[in-house]
Each structure stands twice: as C-alpha cells, then as structure tokens.
Length: 380
Image (cartoon, rainbow, N blue to C red):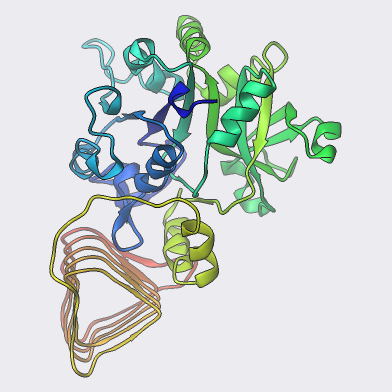
C-alpha cells in the first residue's frame, strides 16, 4: 500500500494529561524533553518516517510556542507546495466559545482539512505517546482485514493505580492466541479494575470519508468523545480491529511520567529501543558547543549546546544555555533552557522550567516519584 494513501492528524492537547504548570504557558505538544526535543517531535517524526507527506496538527490554546517550534515543517521535510504540515486552530463560534468538550469537537474543527485532503486513509494520534514506530505495517493490516477502524495497542502490565487513565482493549481470543489480526471484542474506558493487558496507544487508522461521516453524526447527536461515541457505540456495527505494537512506548501524561521519561533516556537500553529505528527530527538551533570548566564533573548526563558546566552534573538532562557554577551539584534532575544554577547549590530530583535562577548556596531535594518543580522565570 503506497504511503501517500494516508494522512496524519496529531492532537496537540490531551485533556486527560495532568501536566500542571508545565503546560501553563505552552501546549502539551510543545513541552521540552530530552534536552533538545519537544513532545510532538516523536509522533511527527514517526509519521514522516512512515512516508506521510500531509500532517495536520490540531491546536486548542497556548500554541504560540508550538507554532514557533514546528514552523513550516522544514526539519521534517514538510514545507511543500502540495500537502505538507498544517496548523489547525480550533473553530470557535462567537456564541459558543466553550464548545470543545472532546476529541470529536477537535476533529470537527479540522473537517475542512479532512474534506479537502486526497488521501484515502487517516491516522489519528495523540502527541504524548512516545514511540519509534513504522505505521506502514498497521496500514497494510488495516487494508488486508478490510477493517473500518484499526486501533493501535501495546501489551503492558499496567499497575492498578494507573488503570483509571487508560483505555484497555479485549481482542477476540482465538485470533489473539494465533497471533493474527484481532477484531476488538470489548473496549474498557478508564476501568477501575484490570480487564486486559492490551493498552490503547491513542492512535487509530480509519478511512478518511468514514471519519468525516462519523464526526458529523456525533456532532448532530451532541456526542463528544472518540472512545465512547465512535469506538464503543459502533463496536458491533463496524469492523474494529487491533494492531499490536511490540516496541518501546511511554505516555507522558503527568509530572512523574514526564520525569521518568527523561531519566529513562539516560539508560542505554531505553535509548536503544527509542532511537534504533527511524530518526527523530527536531527544530535545529545553531549555538556554540557546551563549555566544560577545568574542575567540572559530568557523569551519565545529556548536556545540550550552549551549556557552561563548572560544577558537578550526574544523571541529569540539561537543555541549551544552562549554567552550572563552580561548587554546584546537579543530580537526577531535568533542567530546561537558560537556567542559572549559582555557586554551591545542590539539586536532586528537581525539574526546572525555562530561565529559572537559583541563588548561591540553596538546596532543593525531591523524590524520584515526586520531583520538585520550579516554574518558568522563577528566582529561588
């Protein structure tokens, strides 16, 4: 199946994600990760690596930093005369400013993009499911099984405390046992007890014209959610199949999961799983190389361009332009752009947003499961 037969739509927001002050001034898709990436870079790169040449990014609010980051789509080779990258601002009527209640409403705002596109199929995905995936096999299965909708999922031993944030899928047992494409038998939306190990990745493939039809039908009946009003409602009427993905998956939907993802990148095993397949592209910023002082100590850390390291950095992720002064120690932490950590400070299990300043001699200690977070432009 030619890759040009599918377009992509990425949700820049996820109402279930509880990111606190990380998303106070930016969209979820624009949250910095890994020292030089943004959350959206992974799913957008996956789509480009899978041959998609038309991608729409839906926005809702606080999307200035997102637009600045993705621009015309040049780093992803999406600055084209035909197809390319499209920013899809929310459609807001003058008399109905709070009409966006769910994913259906967001897609309704993108209807013009969907109607005008020429691709036969659409891949709809949240921005905050981090993986490195080729979508071509999923599309091939979708076509071969003549499915109406194909839900992408991975198998995960989900802790009971996290079930209420996930959608679990139950494929038909025979097909699942034989390793064949499995028609979905039941869908459990945010269950209170464990029903399955198959966790929906918040990505699905559907025929573009069918998607438009389903959106219009939902809007006409005052329905708003994709999982309940499109999937569950049509489970017996439409052929809904599952596609199992066996690679690395991490969902960034809270401060702890954000912190865990950044710390996980410091382990070779997780880096290999995430970066061993297709390339992950991002906006390139030309800056000077990192500068390391004579007596500095750096161990198992990501240090971005433009940093000035005079103290000690251990097991940490530092974005561009961070200054760690002499005598300061940073460990198990995520420090964003242009932070200034002055002399004899000690940081452990903390997250600094952009341009935070911590005065000399201060100490901040958090826990790996509950890191200390300091908002943008704060002076400590």
